[in-house]
Length: 127
Image 1 (cartoon, rainbow, N blue to C red):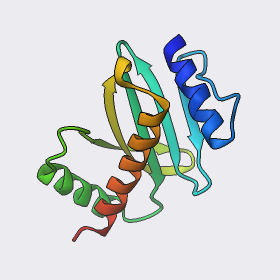
Image 2 (image 1 turned 90 degrees about the vertical axis):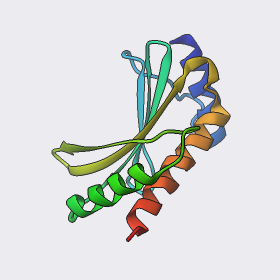
Image 3 (image 1 turned 45 degrees about the vertical axis):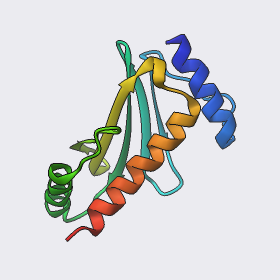
Image 4 (image 1 turned 180 degrees about the horizontal axis):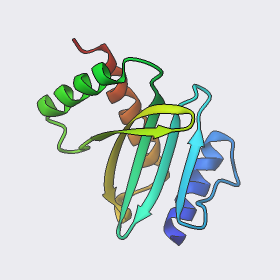
């Protein structure tokens, strides 16, 4: 968890949150200005990075679009997983990717969070 803490501190410094650190369970979740959530967690020797957007209506249609996009995707370098999460605040579409901890860095967190955001944006726009 020490390596993840160091990476999150560097990422936090980049975005103006110098005290950014994982919680007791080794996870972190940030609410972005858009209302979306960005999370990261260490799972064994891997890191899972996820991006979630609240979907107040039409989640079934969006899930179908996202599943079709996944079926057609040739993104082996940055594979994406998709799911739905229900909370008291509503339903969220979650997209995630995982990679070995030794390949994770603040720069990679920036790149992958942008990748997940744009992936979901393109899934929304798909016909």
